Image (tube, rainbow, N blue to C red; front, side, top):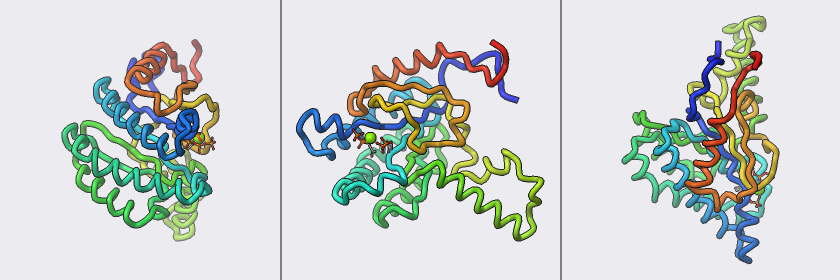
Length: 240
Ligand code: IPE
Ligand code: IPE
Ligand code: MG
């Protein structure tokens, strides 16, 4: 049973679709990568804000399964930005005892990025003060398809009966089964869609859409979003 009567004022898990880097750069007549770099600064700011406000889990959509269709130089630019982020910001994870995790098809990523991710994930594995989850080569449908495939094999091999497959069976086979579902989903840049983000996990999250472009989304904007969350009443189907 979910708790209905009282919604904690601070979400335990925030998920963010960090959108609008390209448009931010275009407005300044700069290449898209300039926007992605500014976007990385917003991620740093929001990660610190999560610590200050007591948000335990932060999941950020950094690269979708659909984003592979972008021009090669943009994709490789994003990958090297990710490597830089891991190198430059690893110390903050240690200082704040924050564990780094990845959700998505990590095997699709270039070897050098994967190695760096695996290194930082291993080095922060034991931390319990918070989790930063990077959604990389992530697609909500891919995640569900991977879970269904795992279940199909278990059934075929006789370890699971078809009638025993329920919501928990699926939830336990998603990429990060131990992470609680997001309470709050933020999307920047004015687009009001999910773009294949956490389809299963967001089923009861509160949604927040803002026109602010991701590179402009810093501590103040985050605090404003949290204020809005605190005003929401989560009912999970119960009467108001
Ligand atoms: C989000 O910004 C970052 C990624 C998808 C990697 P965009 O690059 O989508 O920026 P817009 O939407 O084109 O402005
Ligand atoms: C969603 O943004 C993916 C990320 C932020 C990583 P997109 O910019 O790729 O989404 P669409 O194409 O506008 O739906
Ligand atoms: Mg976009």
